Image (cartoon, rainbow, N blue to C red):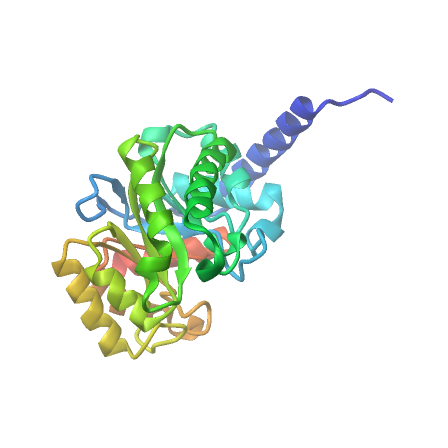
Amino acid sequence: MKRIDRRHFLASLAGTSACLYSVVRAQAGPSPDAPPQGPLGKTGIILSRIGQGTGMNGGNRQSNHTRMGFEKLTTLLRHDYDRGITFFDLADLYGSHVYFREVLKSLPRDKVTILTKLWYRYDGQPSQVPADFKRRSTQMAVQRFRHELMTDYLDVVLLHCLDNPEWEEEMRPYMDALAEAKDKKQIRAVGVSCHNFGALKNAANCPWVDVILARINPKGAKMDGPVDEVVSILKTAKANGKALIGMKIYGEGTLAQMKEECMRFATGLGLLDAMTLGAESTEEMDESLRLFAQTA
């Protein structure tokens, strides 16, 4: 039997994926309008206002997206770019870096915005981890992320899933290391994703934060607090110069029966610089792009 080395194996996979992508593209029908490009707050980053998420039911370095397998996920990501999506929401916790790396090989790096997230809980309980370990862990993570994605820089790196209202003190070593990477041009912007109302309120007023990834929808599904209270905090964050990216726009699928209302609500807020959607198929993403075009 002829031996197939790793390089030829990956090339074969990439070729098969590209072929499948061409078939899906041909069958997809009329293309929805591309989402507009715009600035991500004051970061200097330009991105599509709709982004592709990769973390539906994510954890332990996998998600529904990575469980789709190499061919299906890379086909979806290529489809997104073809539709005008240039913003991709990744995370170490989802294990999605290496999947996007294969797609990125054929994309112009300066036209793509890569957001990823640091899952600090791999180090242990934050209150029990020495500050120096936190700093070194972050430095190694940033280096690893860049290696996994084969890129010199990351556009946005977030501290992932903050749930302590008083997170600044225990996160300070992580924050300092990310700020250092930002000074070295390894990262363009830093910030947080929150899973706690107090943590979100803190982020809105924290000078270190450039970007907040916030859960927002009209019914409060999977959110950090009541809709009106969360919106009030987001207004404060915006007034403080923070860039805002919405997530859980459809309540992690629980509001799928009212997608148009959810999209209309998100676009009507006048607060979000962009939103990330966890579409798991080309049809789902096309549907959202059409809804965005109708409501924005």
